Length: 386
Image (cartoon, rainbow, N blue to C red; front, side, top):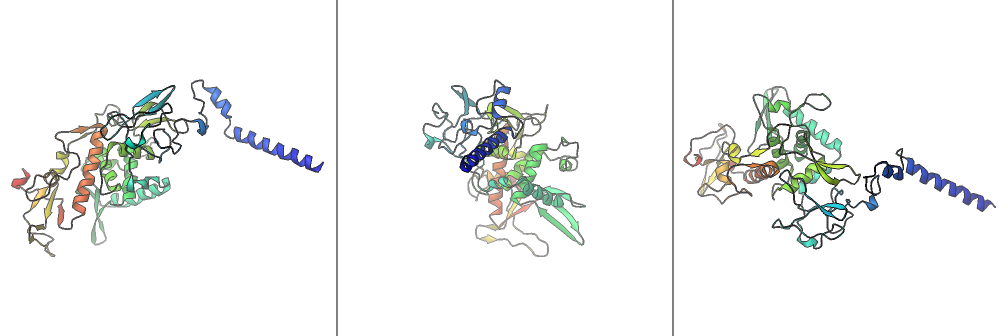
C-alpha cells in the first residue's frame, strides 16, 4: 500500500513539473502556436523541429547557430543573404569559390559540402566574450580618448591615437588592444555618431565634430581591422557574420524576409546603402586615405639610415605614400600588398569590407618591419608621390 501511495505522489509531482514548465513564460507552446496562424510549428521554443537551427550537420546552411559551420553565402549589395525557397521553408544559399550557387537537398542541406567555403574568424572570436568584458574594454579606451587635453589623430592604418598631457609628460597612446577596438566597433556600428536611443549623449560623437570630422564607418572599419588577425583576408561574409554575433544592425536596419534566429526572431542587417535615413551609401576610395599617409624606410638596399637619438629623425630620403607602396608602384620594393586591386570607389558592404582589409594589410606590412616608420605629420614633395 505504501508503494502505491508513493507511486501516486511521484506521478503528481512529475505532472506538476511538466505543467509548470509549459506555463513558465505565461503561455504554453500550444498557446503560442495558436496565437498566430502564420507562425511555423517550431515557433515558441520547439528547437528540435526548427529547420533554421544548425544542428551541427555538415552543411552549415541552416540559420540560428551563431558559431556553427558558417559558409560564404550569396548576398545582396548590403550583405543580406538571398534566401532560397525549398518546399515551404526558406534557406540561405552557399556559393563555391567562383561564386556559383551550390545545390541544396529537400532539407536545405548541401548536397556536396566540400564545395562550400567555411568562414574563419581567428582572433575575432573575442567578440564571444560576455558583454561586460566588452563594456569594460570600451571604458578603458575612453579613458585614453577622453583624457583631459587629449588630441585625437589616426595612425597609419586608421587606428585612433590619443595625445594628452600627464603631469610633465606627453603621452601618445594608440588604441591597439583588439578587445578595445572591437568594443569601439560595436559602439559605432550600433549608434554611429548619433544621439543614443535612450536620450543620452553619444560618447564618440566628438570624433565627428570639428576639428576631427571623422567618418564613423571608416573609423569602425579600422577598429575591425585592429581586432582581427594581422594576416589573412577580410571579406564580406566575415564582416556580416561578426555584425550578427555582436548585434550590430545600426540605426536604419534591413529586415531579411523569411530569415529567423532560433527564437523565431526576425533577422536584421546593417544598412550600408543608407546607414541613416536619407544618408547616401557607404563609399570607399583608398586614395583619399592612403595617398596622404607617409612612411620612411630606414633600410634601403645595403644602406641603413639610423634615427638620431636627439632629434628622432632619420636622413633616409626613401619616403613614400602608403598608397604607392601598397599598390606596388615604388621601384625597389615588392609587388602590390593590397588584397583587392581596383580603381575608383567601392560602395556598400563590399566597400566596407575592402576598407577593413586594406587596413589589415597596411597594419601587417608596417607593424611587421622595424625599419619602416610612420610619419604622421609629413607631407613631402617627392617625385614618386605625385
